[in-house]
Amino acid sequence: MKILRSPQEMTAWSKEQVVAGRAIGFVPTMGFFHEGHLALMRRAGELADQVVVSLFVNPIQFGPKEDLTAYPRDFEQDQALAESVGVDVIFAPEPEDMYPAGFSSTVTVGEELTRQLCGASRPGHFVGVATVVTKLFNIVRPDLAVFGEKDFQQLAVIRRMTEDLNLGVEIIGHPIIREQDGLAMSSRNTYLRAEEREAALSLSRALARARKMVAEGELHTERLRAVLEEFILSFAGTVVDYISFVDQFTLQPVAEVDKDTVLALAVKINGKVRLIDNGFVMPLHER
Ligand code: AMP
Figure 1: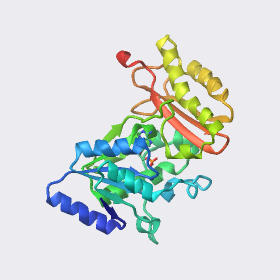
Figure 2 (figure 1 turned 90 degrees about the vertical axis):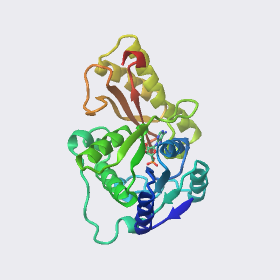
Figure 3 (figure 1 turned 60 degrees about the vertical axis):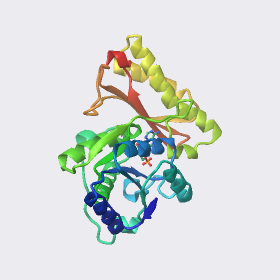
């Protein structure tokens, strides 16, 4: 497995692969790998000849009061885990390589997809994401890229951007990987102390509860939302950022649950750890 630091080296390597007729599968990450990341890497390996993983904690997608400096990092462990699932290249640039002095261009995806949900509480976040993913696509030049459905809005934004700007990369979504008790895996779960770990279960439990109510015939999203809010707040230390029933394609809120409805959740625990989760709420056989 190669470790490449500069964008120039990365692009040179990719050009060699193209000449050799090898397809490149790409997984962009911020590191501190868990099974969710590794599942994306394995998927990329099934679909392409070579797998590139980028490891870059992208400063421009963090707000001024967010956890950029605290974000967990462990390069040695990440290297070993990536190698264990057959990754060919880790691309790990420094912020100065990605944003040298004078950098001043950004990519903005329309408000329809970026204004609500995480976009509402994280202004500028999706400009940061769209800009870094565009840069990474141009540097790595992949044939396909795998993203987790955990970041459901991010996936929708990247699909839109890739199509709108003819980036020529096939975007693959991967289902959420969870801990045994249902908690969606996240690098940020390491911030949780034991009692906060319990409160973190409020998200996956709320999803399960919504599914049960929908299966029992409650389709009215405002009534569902009110029940879920009370349920989540019954866990110690939780503050709801959003509980939204949205259309899977447009991300617009819906009044009644149907087959395309996704329940998206963001909850802050003890005012410090912000967790997200999402999923379809209709039983599979009814969709
Ligand atoms: P991150 O390092 O958190 O920016 O995540 C890198 C990629 O891994 C993104 O496409 C995420 O959506 C994906 N990812 C993170 N956690 C999970 C998970 N639990 N299941 C599936 N994909 C995930």
